[in-house]
Image (cartoon, rainbow, N blue to C red; front, side, top):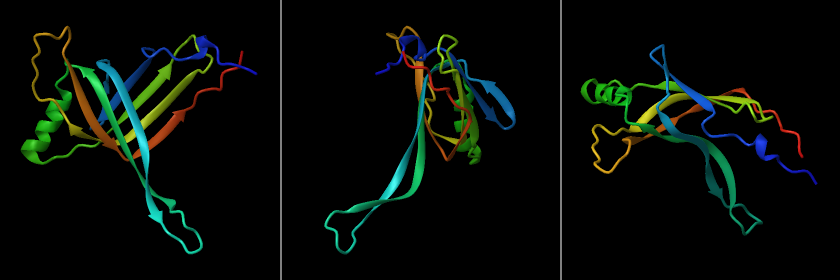
Length: 154
């Protein structure tokens, strides 16, 4: 039986992310952690001849969150624009994972139509070594530009 070589796992710091906002590309070097997931919405269905409830997929929802170092005003500005002018901005985030020591290669995923849910507007913390903020968001589409290569088993 084969096994995954430790060298083929991905080191979490080996990656990059870019946001495309109003046609401008912003390198998101300040990201500490980003996760985005899709959850299927399912409806329960009872049918004749079966006692168990069955489930049918009825759409999906994309949600994400990122922890970033408190060094950019970009997301606060986007939220202020919504608060003051009612302009709700949608943008894309492209995430690439690429660890040169891993045989898995590179994966690039684009989160489409990202919309901010919650943004820290101001922060102070006398016990923090570095200020961080959590930003939650939704998205409604995904494009996989490049997929990982299946690593050879050891």
